Length: 483
Image (cartoon, rainbow, N blue to C red):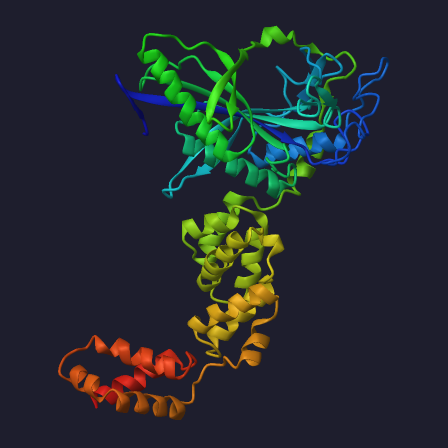
C-alpha cells in the first residue's frame, strides 16, 4: 500500500473518478443536429438544443446502442429499464435551465476495469454506473474584453458519464484507470478518447484519511482534460488536504478547478448534493425499455477487448506481460503487430515494433496510423534478417532509410549494396589481411589476452563495411587465432 508521509504519520488517498465520454455519433442525443468537432460556433444547433418553446426531445437509438455496448465492454450490468431525469441548474451555456440526465435508474449498473500497473501487477477497480446525459454548451471568455460568448454546438451532444468506485489509492492508479478506460472505449468504437478536444474529461474526487479510518470529506476537481493533469491534481490536492487537517482545520466539501499554469487546485464553489439539482423524471421522455435479444445482439458484435487480447498475445505469441500490455493498449498497435508477426518470430516482431518503430514514431511525433513504415514492409525487413540477407546491425540502417522514404527494405538493400557477405572465401581473405596488419595483437591474444577477440571482430566488420555474416566471422576468426 502506498501512503503519503505527513507531519503526524502516514496518510492514505482515496480517489474516485467520474469520466465524461462523448459518444461517437453523427447526431446529438435528442436532436438531429451534427456533432463534428471544430465547426463554426453555433452552426450545429437545432431548435431542441437551443431550447425553443414547444420543442420536444426525440431519443437517438444509436446513442443508446453505444451506451449498452460500452456497458458490455466494462462487464457491467445492463439495466433493461432506465429513466431520463431533469437535473436542474442555471448557467448561461445551458439554454433549457436543466440537463437531461439519468439519476436513480441509469442504463448501466455495476461493472469493473482491470488496471495494468507499471510494476507488472494488476488490480480491479469497480465501476458504479454509466449513465447517459446531454452535454452543455461552451462559454468563451477570451473573445471579448468585457463579454462572455456562448457556443451551443456542444449543447445536446450525448455523453456517457462513467463513475468509478472510490477504489484507487494513488495518482498512478488513477492514471492507469483513465488510460485503460480510454483504450476500452476506443476498441469498442464508442468514444474517441480525445482529451485535447474535450471528448473525454474527468472529474476527480479526492479525500484523505489515516490508514483504516473512515473516508474523509472529499473535494471534486472538475473537468480535468489530460491524464498528466489528473495525476498532478491528485498529488497536489491530497497534500493540500493533509496540511489543512494536520494544522487543525477541516476540509470543506467543495468543487475545485485545476490551474494548469500554477499547478494548484483552486476553489470554485461549494459542492452540490443531489437534492440541490431537484431531479425528477423528464415528462417528455418515456422510461427506456430494452429488449434482451437486442442487448444480446449487440454483445455478439463486441470486438476482442484489451484484456482478452493481452492474454492471447501472452499465450499464442509467448510475449512477456509487459510487451503484450504495450501492444494491446491501442487497437491500431495490436493490429500492426499481428500483421508483422504473421508467419514470423513473434518476439523479434515485438522487439522491432516496440523498440525501433515506436522510438522513431515518438521522435517524429506521429501515431502508428501515420507510420511511414507499413506493417508489411517491417515484416519484409525482418525476413531479410531471418534469411541472412542482412545482419541485425545493417537492418537498423535500413530501417532508418525506410522511415525516411517509405520504401521497401529489399529495394534499399539492393540500391545501397547492403547485402550480407556470406562467401566464406571473401570473409577469410578479410580476416587474413586484418591478422597480418595486427601481428602484435595476434601474439598478445595467443599469450592469453582473450579480450582482444572483440577487437579482431570489429576490424573485420569495419573492413567489410559491416556486411560480413557475424556468425561466420566468429567461426573463421576463432579457427585462425587458435590454429
